[in-house]
Each structure stands twice: as C-alpha cells, then as structure tokens.
Image (tube, rainbow, N blue to C red; front, side, top):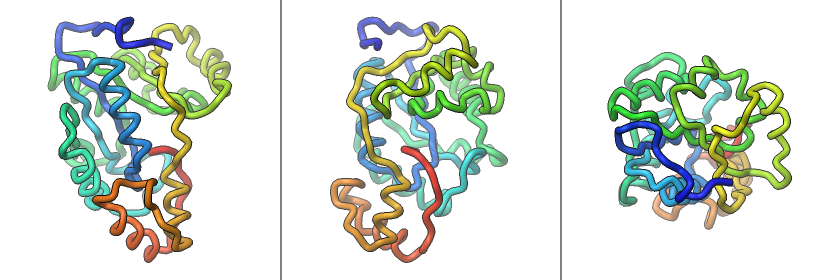
Length: 215
C-alpha cells in the first residue's frame, strides 16, 4: 500500500484525479472513495465523470438524472468537480478517451481511480495498455485477501506501478441500493440525504435492477 508521502506526480502539471463510473446511483461509498483519494494522493483536483454509454454495463436511469444527482452530492466539496465530458463526446464511453481529454486539458498525467474488482477483467478494457501508459492507475480496496491481484499479475505483469490505496474497504454497491429501493426499503445511510427520497422514489417506481458494482 502507498501513502501520500510516497506518491509523487510524474508530470510537471497539477495533480488531477479521474473517477469514472455509472453512478447508478451515486452513494456514500463513492464519497468516501473520493475523500480518501484526495487526501492520500494529495490531488489538486478530482474530476468525477459519469459514463454516458458504459461499454460493460447498462444503466437503469438516464445520464441527465445521474449527472444531476452527482452535482448535488459533490457540489459543495472542495477540489471535486463533476464533468459531463462523456456526454459531450458521445458514443461509447471508453476510459482511454476521457484520460486523454483531461491529460491534454490540464497538461498532466492523471491519476485514474478504479475499484479493486477492475483487476479481474482489466485486460478486456478498450486499449488497456494505453491506459496504463497514459495514466497513473489507482486502485481502491473492495475485498479482503486481494482476490484479483494474482490474475492481474498474470495479464498485466509487474504491478509495482499501480497505486493501491490504503483505506477502509467499502462494502456497498449501487446494485444493492437498487434492490433495496425496489423492495421499498429505506436508503437512509446508503445514499446522501439530499437525494435519498428522490432515489428511493425513482428506483422504487422504475421496477428495474441491473447488475453492477460500486460504480
């Protein structure tokens, strides 16, 4: 595990993080990941980027609603901003395009934050080698025992350049939240209060519950 004192930017630009995902819906786990990432990596800016058209999953609700909730949740947190870049770009929301965009925008090699489960299929990501080259890959823990590290070593090789965040394991997922809402259960403590009632009503009425992880 790396701490903030051991991490330095590999470029002359500012330290910028990118945290993408479906956010279907955004929940308290996302907030905790963002805050720890800001602190540990000592970022100047963390950009939260909701996927417009995710390549590996379907979303339950339109982009506009997910983006609106993110703006409400992160709007008052210093150094965090929410971007609709992937909607502006259109097409399939491949991470490499987002990384290249913000790298060019801020003249830096960004920190790209993913959950530990991504290590189980990272080789299936579009241009995954380019992601490893053009961004500092940052992984936050999701499981005890590091179950996907061996697989990652087999397909990615040396993992020494990957930054593994030393932070609490957040065992909460958007999938579980959608299931609770669909069953009419409260989401108090699962999603921020400023959007809780709307999230409960939206997923409770939609009757949909697609599979997905922390994003």
